[in-house]
Length: 92
Image (tube, rainbow, N blue to C red; front, side, top):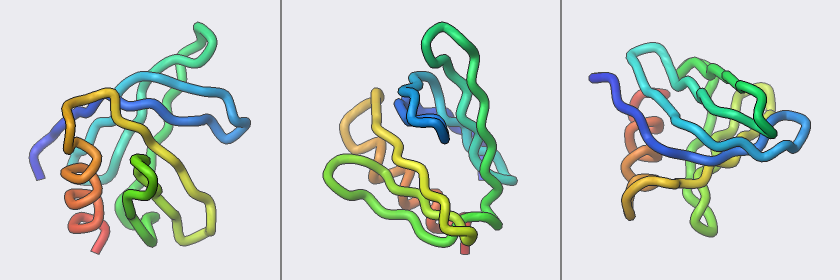
């Protein structure tokens, strides 16, 4: 898988809104951005992902341990569908 980035928004584990980018590489996804002026980084390996789906215009990523992450697109139309397809394929 080639490296790709997407402009996204998401919530931290504590519920604080973040904006930044989601990067894909051959190991997983990395979220880099900011929340309330503070830098935020979160990594999820493809082997941690149980389910990926688009629901109500948001990408839902569920991990094997039950934690989930909701991601919104700040990118071009269709970016969430492309991202969901790439994540689902890589997580298999």
